[in-house]
Length: 443
Figure (cartoon, rainbow, N blue to C red):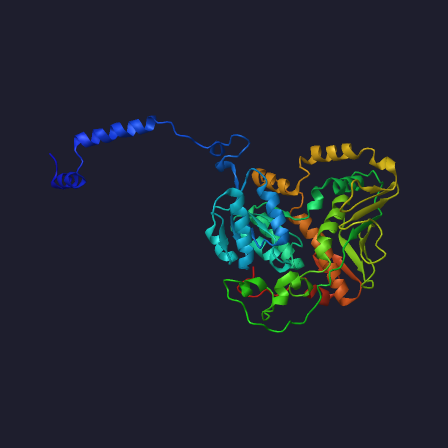
């Protein structure tokens, strides 16, 4: 027997047996019509199926970040979906670029990193190319939110921040790559391998290009009317740094570069080149580094506890290479150097270049790494392996850069204990290992 409720429901739906079977017949006919599925949805014709793509977002993508983003979205297994930037002009520029590439209007925009990370649970990895002060906090926040991170250098503002990046990556099991891309470029890899494999003999002296940036100003620019938040989220622009009134001089043309609260100094170039040098040295038994203060125009000599002299080179006497971002290794069997713009590395003897291709082939076979920094990161996102410029690589090079900044500030020699992560017998220097971070942007 049919219940009153069932009768009422059937009448309400108005569905007779005839209409039901007519609907079934129509559905069957529809299923028989061929359905055309784009090749891109199936991963054909050199494309990658959507289920296999790495979903990418970006934080603070200006000039350098735009270059990184172009390198990433040129990879077939990447799909960029959202950008977070405190400047409307930057957000719109990235959205326009991405939507134009994909032929859509789908790229989302945000001005608050907290909202971006909370809402975009689909994002697996983020590209971070903010100003110096934001690199470590944004990386830490992103990794805590379950994202893998490719972060531009200099990757931390203080030694304490660098430690926290390492701890966060390990605790949350995240893949992290810092943007020291020359660790993945052939000429630099060759020079590094010449040192690492002993072809130059035991290295006694290494050189890194630091090109001091003069990020030492402690003054404030005069206050100007603050733009509407929609145009510039000024509080977020400053982030964890001490508050100061708005002035366009901080924002336009990278003016923030020159202010101590907002920037690093040695680390601007040294983040690259010190990492390049350390990759060629045996750092396993290095427990401390001594820094010898010099004049602002001269090199700073540092001495590793294993006896290697590391020269942070700057000024007119820096003739260890031509070009920028150079490194050099000196040993009893000769020297090798590389810098930007080289067709081949510089060496003390042409004979050292005879095995150029073989040394690079041995490196790629041993490490299974491509000579492509972005691709190395993306491969590790998939494999969960260690990147060529992982957290410890970043931290070890940044310690030297930031300690050199502190040495320059105090204008005296310093010794840094790597095992304890502190300056030896110098409480004033130790106080500069960290800086207070302003709410609500602290991590």
